[in-house]
Structures are given as C-alpha cells and as structure tokens.
Amino acid sequence: MTDTVLTDAAHPMPHITGYPAARDARCPFNPPAEVRTKTSERPVTKVQIWDGSTPWLVTRYADQHALLTDPRLSIDETLPGFPHMTRGRSETAKHTPPLITNTDAPEHTRLRRMVNMPFSVKRVEALRRSIQKIVDDLIDTMLAGNGPVDLVKALGLPVPTLVISELLGVPYDDHEFFQRNSNVTVSHTATEEEVAAASGALAGYLGELIDRKMAEPEDDVLSELAAKVTAGEMARMEAVIMGVAILIAGHETSANMISLGTLVLLQNPDQLDALRGAESPKAVAAAVEELLRYLTIVHTGVRRIALEDIAIGGEVIKAGDGVILDLSAANWDPEEFAEPDRLDLTRSARHHHAFGYGAHQCLGQTLARVELQVVYSTLYRRIPTLRLAVPPDEIEFAFEGVAYGLRSLPVTW
Amino acid sequence: MTFHVELDEPRCVASGQCAVVAPDVFDQRDDDGVAVILDESPADDLLDDVREAVAICPAAALRLVEG
Ligand code: HEM
Image 1 (cartoon, each protein chain N blue to C red):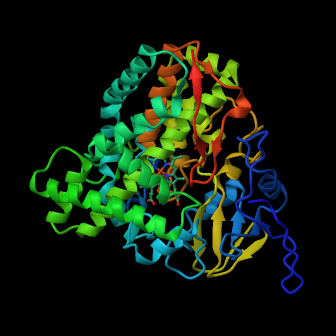
Image 2: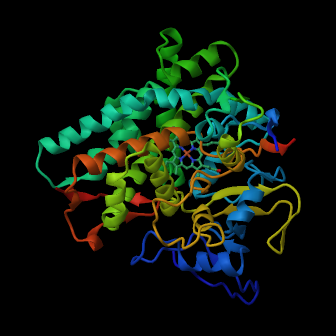
Image 3: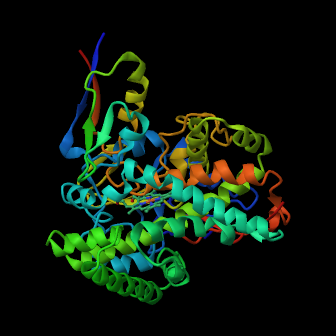
C-alpha cells in the first residue's frame, strides 16, 4: 500500500495517511519514513486502515509504555471500532471465544496464568540443550551437502518448528500441513474464506490430538491443556484454540528473526565479527536484544481500543476510538534509543518493545530468546565463511504477514 | 541506604522476565509462574539487576522502594 494523503472535500482529514505504509526498498530494515516523521512531529495521530476507519497511531516509546499498561485501553476485539489487522481477523474475531489474545484483566490474568508454565524461565532453560542439538544437527546437514542452500528452509523454519512441535507435542512430520495453514491465518492478503478454512483445519487437527492426549497423556503442552479440560478448568474449545495460537505464533516469528538476523549481520561484518568472537552468554544475549530491537518484525502495530477518554501526546483519544501502537516506531524512537539506525550489538536494548509491552507481552519471549541465542552463537562460528549466494538486491522480503521476513535467503560458504 | 522490593501480585502476568534478569532476587511459582521474591532486601551489587527487572516488568507489578 502506498501512503495516500486523503483530502476528500466532503471529509477533510488533512493529516490522515494510510497505514501500514510501505517500506523503502533501498532500506527495507528501516520503518517507513512517514512513520518515523510522525514519531518526531505528531507522535499521536490518526491514520486510515484497510476498512476505511481512522484509528490513532502511537509511535513514541514513552507513550506506548504508558498506554500498554493503562487499564483504559482494551484488547477486546469484539468492540465496535476495534482496529483489526486484517479483514480475515475482523471476521474470525466475531466467533473467537475468550482467549489470552482478546481479553483484559482480570480474565486475561486468569487465562494467561493457565498457559504460562511451559514458557517459564526454568522450563525453557531446561530445553536449551535440546535446542542446541536441533541447531547442530541442522547445520551438520547443511555442511554435509554443498552450498548454496536456502537458509529459511535449511534452518530458519525448522528450528522453531521442531522446538514448538516438541514442546506442544505435535508430530513434526505434519509440519508442511501446519506451516501452510498458519501462514494463511497471519497473512494480510488472504481472504476471509481462506483464513476461516485454514483456522478450521488447524483447529480440527489440534482437537484430535488433544482428544488423544486426554486418553494417553504425554509430557507436552497439549497434554497439559487436555488435563485442564478433563479437570473442568478449561473448555475443550479453549484448549484447542490456545494450542492453535501457540502453534501459529511460535514458528514464523522466530524463523523470520533467524533469516533476517543473518542477512543484517552479513551486511554488517564488523558486528558479525564481534558476535562470533563474543565469549560470554551475556554478550550473546545483548546481541539478540539489539537484533530484536533493530528488526522489530511485528511491523504493523499491536491493536487496542479505548474504553475511556485518554489524554496523551497532546491529543485526546476518545472512548471507543481504535488505537494502533507501532512497535517498530517505538524501537526506532531516538529519544529512547540513540542513533536507532545503527545496529550496535553492545547497546543495552533489552527494554525494547519487539515483544510488545504490558499484560499481553509475548508469551513465548523466553523461548524465542533462547532459540535466537543458540542460533546466533552457533551458526556463524560453525560456518565462518557463510555468505550470500546472490546479490543483496535479489533477496525478496515478505511484508504481507503480521511479522515481516524473507521469502528465501540463498547462502553459501 | 537500604532498598526493598515489592510485588503487586494480582497484577503479575507471570512473564518471568524478572527471573531472567535478576535470578538471585526473583523466581517463578511452580504451578502458575507468578513471580516470587527470593530476597526482599537485595544487596547493593544486585540493585542494577533489580532496577532492570522493575523497568522491564510488562505488568508494572514491581517496585524498588527505599527504606
Ligand atoms: C522473535 C519471535 C517473536 C516475536 C517478535 C513475537 C512478538 C509478539 C508480540 C509483539 C506480541 C504482543 C501482541 C499484542 O500486544 O497484541 C506477542 C504475543 C504473543 N506471542 Fe509472540 N513473538 C515471538 C515468538 C513467539 C513464540 C515462540 C511464541 C509461542 C511459543 C509466541 C506466542 C505468543 C502468544 C501466545 C502471544 C499472546 C500473548 C497475550 O496476548 O497474552 N510468540 N508476540
């Protein structure tokens, strides 16, 4: 979508531009220039989205930090005026039961505490060794053949998909089925019917697995959800949809971080050298945070609606107004991150908004961090000559999803 | 000067980030992941980690207070 300034005489709305705006192909990692201008000039301003509605866009880090813990802002996507990400999402929202992704406290707190444990720090740390093995095995396979390979297929997608399959208890052999369908559900270009069909297929698939695990529990998240259904703490449908949400959220995001992170590091050889030489886990962890900040793959904002009037950034967001918080803008806000255009793996960036902020901050963040720490500290050491196999301008970005990424990343060594 | 850490438990969404950045001071409860304070009056050398934990807590459920 290009950035159109609407100056319809009947509805004069001079400052309203279309959202999301396209990125400049010459600097695809940078948030669109007009969004960055808003951060400095009109940090709280209205934009027009796909359905013609005009929610507020909040671009400053400090404003997002305040709003995302403000109880006057709601994530209830059934309220009229909610600024849905896509047409597909606006349709599915009508039929979605209460979930962590669409409820406010105290209901959200109750639901989230039910699914938190598998993603707790201790349980995720306990997976580090098996994640390391997954990564080592995939790199062995790469090295056993000759380059070039597509890093998205060879490493980016399989790492998080193997990890989330193991954690949930979903057979990895079905990955083509669930990857294909989850891609549709998070696409900005899929039709309502396509999204409904894909969500339905995933729900049917996970429902059968949960039923099987009710009878024969194993040591995995679906079995834990199944046990909550048996105990009457959760409806079967809730468990199914929770499973679908984890499966969808859990692989494409990390996959995109792996391939985009590699591309940006190959284009910043001094930073790549520093990372390769990093001795301490702390330095690797800091590098992951900076890459999360710099790339902010969830690039089209998190969505909310105001329940009451809220004065912020010199404007008043009225009760019932939609609110979009552009995380990439906040992570490139020079007031919070000096020289945001500079990738600096030593900066302290951990307070970034790449996983959102507030009660809905990413459930899988600890898992994603460990996956990325393992990949970034292993791949470039084991393949020190890793390089692009095509000219940089032939690398195709995918911007249509909720998280942006690469269609493929041909590399050789 | 001494400091102590306060947790507003009903707000906690159990993201566990405090236990990542300040593992000597915070842990997560076994059944639901809600934060647990291990050390209410952390020593000076832990204060930077605790300040970071307070700053990144997504639920704004932590406070470091003087006295
Ligand atoms: C680098 C990888 C990832 C990024 C950048 C990311 C980003 C995000 C963001 C920005 C949100 C907040 C949405 C909002 O406030 O409306 C979120 C929520 C969520 N994420 Fe992630 N995510 C990643 C990986 C994962 C993984 C690996 C999982 C699961 C295993 C996961 C599961 C979830 C879930 C279930 C939520 C909803 C939480 C709630 O509403 O309470 N994510 N993620």
